[in-house]
Amino acid sequence: MTTLLLLWLFGGLLGYAAATKRGWSPLAGFVGGVLLGPLAFLLFFVSGVTGDDKRQKCPRCAEWIKAEATICKHCGGTLKGQTT
Image (cartoon, rainbow, N blue to C red; front, side, top):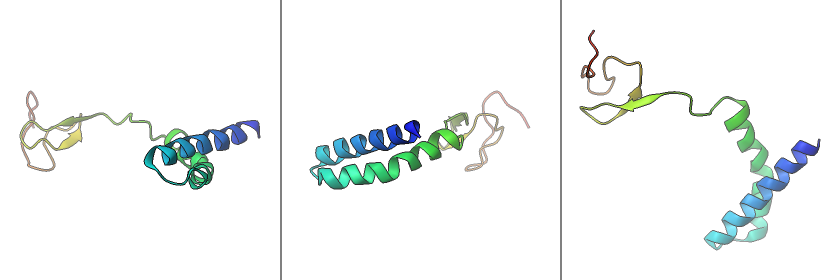
């Protein structure tokens, strides 16, 4: 219970700071942070969205592709050092 309360407080403070910096209503920023803070925590830390998905840019078209890819899904180019 204490952890959830701290998440709400932290989210509210972040929302307050962001709203103040942009010239918006600090109260609305605090309320928005309180409501969205725990949701953001759940999305990024609990659900596993942590950036573990390794990606690289295709040298031919500069689109992001998986590091394990041997052929670019955007342009069809074979990646350097890899054969099919």
